[in-house]
Image (cartoon, rainbow, N blue to C red):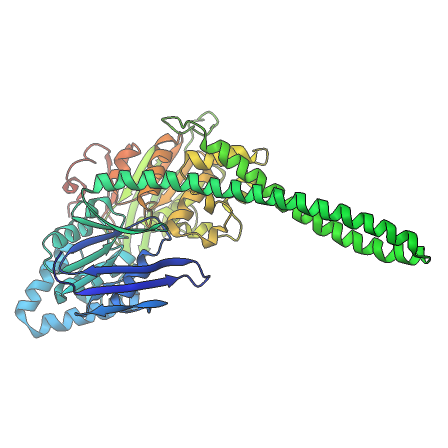
Length: 531
């Protein structure tokens, strides 16, 4: 590695709840191109914020020999608007700057800067603006947190090409497989510790999947140890209770005011009995979950996931759009769209700001079309918004699965989690506390288990924020799904893997094109809509 530009020495950081993320971590980065990878929730974004100097560690120190530039995971619309204004001022000040800015703007697929000064129309455009500004500043150290999230295909291709030629220091937090294949070094963050691994990326992905399986096994071993300890505690408690009861009997014989004493003790014994029942229930729940997860992990998993049982297809579409028009701030996004969706697999694609999310909301009845008619059979449709924000709940995944399938046993539910490679340790946490990627997977499990079954899934950017293990599990689940699918996504690998049959391409100016799936594996040029 080259001379260090940023260093972390004996770094220790924990979450606000007290969970440790890093302990005594040492890290040195020079003019290297490094990806920080790891499963959701292990502290990758926190580490990037510390490298940028935006967050102080609990212990240890940061040594910065340059001033890094960070593009955060959540693009701030106001910062993006300020970036557009700054780029406009630079373009007016210097003709050479204007040429460079226009070249980057066009390559990134952004509209003219003057149209963005009042604020970008989509998160993808906001992210592109922040990336363009950061790349044109050419800082000695560039820090990018999930830079491909929300980007369309033109934006991802532009970013990969620019980072391939980047000659300064570069640290990227990402799950995007295409981008990671461009990087030579990986810093793996995990609860068990952090380590540096050189490429290739595909070998790294296999390693992380194996480690995830080992983590599941360790979780079950810990559960079993907890259940055994509680059993020992319960045996000790019962022995002590028997001794107390013998002492109470002797005491009762000695006292004369037996009625009053019995009345007081009866109340105390009732309170103790209630507390004992609560303890026994908790012990029994932990023991049952430990047994269920142990049996589930001993199952030899099939090559394909079991498919939900769907009723026979009646041939009637779940969604019908006729002459639909959609506008945003007076700008036409879609016009004269006719669409019938049943048990087929449809991808919705197009540049940032083209109206993909708006179209999905119209399909689901969450937004009215500006013209035309929409008919849907809501009881047949299951939906997951970006980051599963529509699934934020104080209840756990296990609670939702029980509600959807009240006759299912704990063992059956645990087996389902293992088959879908969902982390067992997260199944009992509130969905609100999960990361967006974890919540997307939890929501999909709930839809798979719903009774009566839905037969059309509508998913908006389902791979956003997913780690590698989660992405592979999502692909397997959607490939096994026997019903219809509508997926808005820029992830070609996902669309190929799940067997998309038709692609609806939006251009954001009112035009649209419907094409068969042929060409998904080819260059993205086939998706371009002609003026």
